Image (cartoon, rainbow, N blue to C red):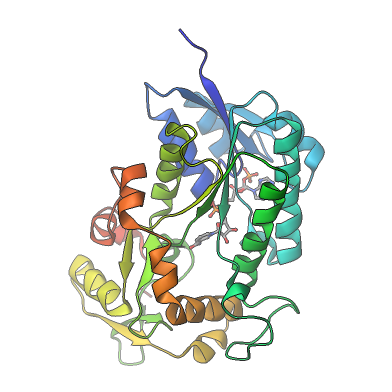
Length: 316
Ligand SMILES: NC(=O)c1ccc[n+]([C@@H]2O[C@H](COP(=O)([O-])OP(=O)(O)OC[C@H]3O[C@@H](n4cnc5c(N)ncnc54)[C@H](OP(=O)(O)O)[C@@H]3O)[C@@H](O)[C@H]2O)c1
């Protein structure tokens, strides 16, 4: 029997990398095996991956010398950065550069780089319809990823740029679900007007990435965008109302109001949603549902995700 091909997975204990790791490990007939990268091989999540059959190795995206041996001998690498751990686009770019250079050093045959759009191509820094943030960005956690695409392409790596989108899990872990308004009614707040927002379960991002690896060379040197559904705020609220059995009202605030909310990253996300709203046609077109389904035949829509997850959404 042929030896299985190894996929090195950055962030294997997290949402995106974890979903890819589980997609491979749950497939008994997979042609791939998992090398899970983590900073702590003794964490419960790392130990659980080992129990499921993954090789677990220590690596830190801060340190290229730890990434080189972690990528050595692998067929594929799934690369992702962790903006919300440090809120620094400069760090994010350095981490992407480290991964690209380590992948080049190790002669990785197929890299998937989990990216997002550089919004400055649509809204240049001197365009004052939204504020410039951190001196050089409109949507720092998008722009730094989009700018980092060139670290992978300039090295001539065999790369698939995977453009992801808003996770439904943000409603569980990031406080973005419905919240009680002053009159006790549940409000789902987004500054999206009536534009459609591509969104997805984080679980399906890994499954789509697995689909890309399974297709061999088809997606090498290509960009592919994915989503589980394109929904308006009203459609989100209607689905939430049906699933929760309680009325949820779409609260369409303006982006400047959202930017003023009192949580870390509110300005970045306010600009992000404004970009999503103002360029919805382009943003949706690059996240084709049929392509996503072809990569991941079990792709969930929001209603089916809610059936499994509605109890986990905090409503206070
Ligand atoms: N939330 C959204 O809607 C959304 C949508 C699209 C894209 N994104 C992007 O997704 C990215 C985050 O991915 P995720 O959601 O999969 O992350 P996550 O669930 O927060 O997972 C992060 C994992 O990365 C590992 N990690 C953190 N710092 C590391 C480092 N320095 N070196 C190596 N590993 C490190 C941690 O593992 P160990 O502790 O085991 O090392 C952790 O389990 C962000 O850049 C965000 O912008 C988010």
